[in-house]
Length: 438
Ligand code: ASP
Ligand code: MG
Image 1: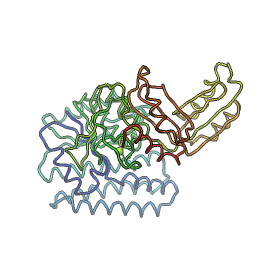
Image 2: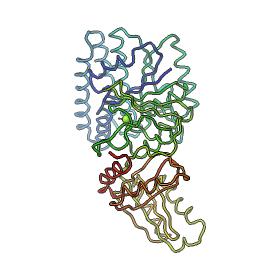
Image 3: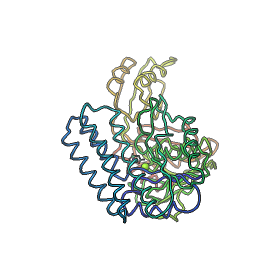
Image 4: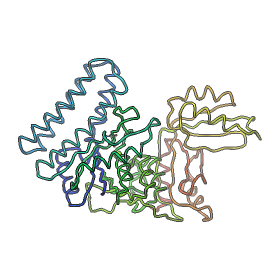
């Protein structure tokens, strides 16, 4: 069973939904994972924010506008009355559900219930469309099998056994449609896999079934060697190892959800990134094939804060780093990069939510300096320590750029440097030239 995931733009209009049919309709058994129509999750988030602010009038207006958009889409999507009426009713029901949250106090659980509506709508609408044109399909409710545990990690055993039970109900069926992104939590409430989480759904489903392949369909022809939004000339990378792909996804390559490579890697399920606009393009294959001695791609992650803690107490002392890290642990703030000298340590975080209390605790160790608006530039590849010259190539390329931190040797797949966000574009362009000759 293959798993095919289509993102928001691939289901973003009636026209795009119709075009999907040709990509899913062959005789091979498959599970199709869909995102919400593009813009929907953001719109739902806006509704939720208005409700948090107790601005029910604004929430109602936003809700009406979004409902109208859906009612317009179905007029274009369906040719006949039965499908049109069924979809019209579906949309009314979902928006009534959203409006029901305007009646009393708004909670985080209700926000999650609102955010789930986009995928519930897109999958049902696509299923009705297939029905109208006479292609049999089954709508599998993700809320019956996708679950996260009390640490918000996917509950793999639960997912595997419940998904298999669901599929067993439909022996002989070949085309299954399910919602990306949404799940239940350890308490059985509606929850989600965080923004962009439909990719994660796809690889979790693929891993649960040890699929022969997971395909992630987007609107770009695979993972590129550099950020195409910033650098003019980039090329798709045809093959990546799981480790390379995971580094790229985590460090800013927006095409993939940061943690979605892991489940596929664990079960050795290949992941192929493909382009709905150009279905025949080769795309990128992510697999357990390992590469040696190459620089594969660069990516950038913005919104980074660097923190330097300087203390003579660190000199020859043990336990210093542990005490520093414990502060971050108490505030559940992950650290991305670390560099140390004998008397100072610099580290970066991407979530500044608890920055103030963290600094308040860190000053007990020494002087603390904070630099905001930093960007991690991550050079991904497969570099073994024995092979010489990679560092030289990277830093030769970056010779005109001020570097705040350098991290080399943490893994064989990543060299990271920290720069001011203002220098990001220049750094990415310099690397494109120096490393890829583009
Ligand atoms: N619809 C969700 C989002 O916009 C999940 C996804 O598209 O992957 O984040
Ligand atoms: Mg996405």
